Image (cartoon, rainbow, N blue to C red):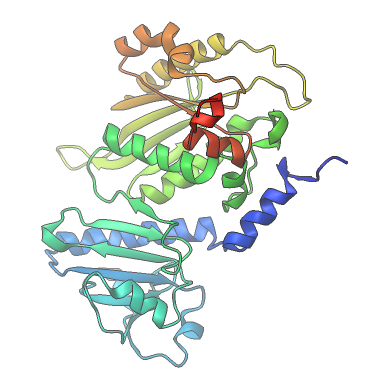
Length: 363
């Protein structure tokens, strides 16, 4: 009897995940991103004012008044103006920072998260700010599922400097690991998007590239709250996948827009959504991606550019077979070539990550 599939994922794998980790909570991606942008602006104001405390914790509550009931704290309704110190305190705020309370919890550098959990607030989405050792800009980390789940953590990029290659590649690697690597990873995320129709057979959902684009855009908006990632912007050469801008100013102080990155995405599959072998040429798709990256990067005048391949194919592909025919053009046009392979099952993911001699008959 065939096994039941939910979104292309075997039902027993979903049951195993929920048994181990529980049903994942959802803080609401849109609300969380708006909160991070407001908070990033506040951090910038306090940093510019020369604040030199050790750090702070901000807890996002949907209804601050209800959460404060029975708790002690000082109301700070003007916190968002940026005139009040924010460090060495634990804050309870709403998404607009308009309803803010400094909680009466003793601040301990490096140990305040445990206090938050002990106070029964470990389920609230949390942001930690570390300003020790003169960190400039400060290190900012976001825990979307609260301090009670330290495994789900994003390091945010706060500041007006261009996003460098190491930071961007690390961000995309984190996105792959936490949102795409296996069908279980996709299922455990908060995204409504799905990549697989039947993962075990390698059958993708219609337009998997668009699903990945939507998921990645939300991730980038959270990680880079000071920047403005945009998708499907219209250019004279077509619609680019993702561009990441920063609202800058000219030498004369006039408003300007700096484009740090253009990302062109390609999802390569060897089967169609109707479970037929794909007739599309992988080589042609990658070549087209290089040409698109060049065109959109020139249009946007981006500082950096990358072709990002998400490989859904079954065979043991590698970067060489995927990129060798375009590598010279990529070097000439300073295009980063990055590729990630999406596993078709949790078991395949384990086998890829933890190879054993027994896999090849060795002892």
